[in-house]
Image (tube, rainbow, N blue to C red):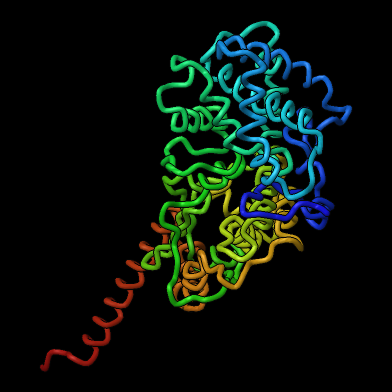
Length: 409
C-alpha cells in the first residue's frame, strides 16, 4: 500500500493535464532536487558539484559527516518523506544522502551568490551566468523541491559568522537576495516557516491585505478585454507595489493600478509552477495566482490588448512580438485552472470594471479625448473653432438685434 497523504504533504507531481501543455516548464534543466527526478542521467554532472559543496559544507560546520547524517536520519527523514505526494526512495540511507546533498547544494550556492564565502574556480555555477540562470529556474519548480525545514536545519549548522544569530530570518533574507527576480525586495518577510522554496516565493506574491468584496460568494471575472476597457475610458497605471496580485481600481477616475509584469524567458515556467502548486495544495481554498492568471487571460485576447497594456506601462515584453505574448498568456489559463466556490479575490474589482464600462458617458468622454484631444494641436484647433463659433454667434445675434431694434426717425 502507498503511504497515506497527510497534512505534511506539500510537494507534488504536476497533474498530466497541466504538464502536457508545456512540459519544459515543469522539468529541471540541469539539476535535480528531491526524489522525483533523482538519478536521471541528464543531471549526473551536477552531482559532482553537489559533492564538492558537501565537502566544503562539512568543513565549515566543524562537524563530522557522520554526525550530520545522524541528525537527518534521526530527526528529519520521516517528516521529509511525508512531504511528498508519491512514494519516494525506500532505502533509508539513499534517501538521507539525497536530502543532505540537495540541501547542502542549495545552502552553499546561496552563500556563494551572496558572497558569504569565498568563490573558487571550481564554482562553475557562479563563473557561468547562463548555467546559474538555469539552476535558478530548476530550484523553483514544484517537482524539484526539498522541505524547507531541511534547508533551514542545515543552514543552522553553520557557525554564527556565516549563518547569523537568527538563522530563520537570515535564511529568508538570503533567499530573497538570491531569488531577487522572483521575490520583491520591499515585501515584508512573514514569521511563519514556509513549506519549501516555491511556497516561500508564492507567499511573497500575495498582498498583506488582499482586496475582497464581502458581498461576493463566487468568482467573478471581467467581461471586457484591455482594448475594450481602454475604449470605455479605463486607464492602466503601474503601482508602487511589487506583489503581482496587489491590484486596485479607482472608480472616480477609471484607473486600474497594478504592479509591473515583466515577461521574460523564465516567466512562463515561474507562473505555471505557482499555479500548479496552488491547484494541488489549495484546491478548496482561496486561489490567488489562478485568479490573477484568469484575469490576465480576460484582459489579453489579442496582440492589440498587449499593445494597450504595454503603452500604459504595466507590461514589459522581452520574449518577442506581442502576438507571442498574447498566445502565451492565453495558454497559461487553458483548461487547467479551476476556481473554487470560495474564490472571490478581485471579484469586486471585476464587478467595478464591468459597471464602469456599462456607463455610456465614460465611453463618449474617452472617445472625445482620444479623437479630438489627443494632441496639443487638436486641442488648440478645437479651442480656435469654439472661439470662432462663439464670435460668429455673437455677430449673428448682433445683426438680428440690430435688424429689429432700429432707431426711430
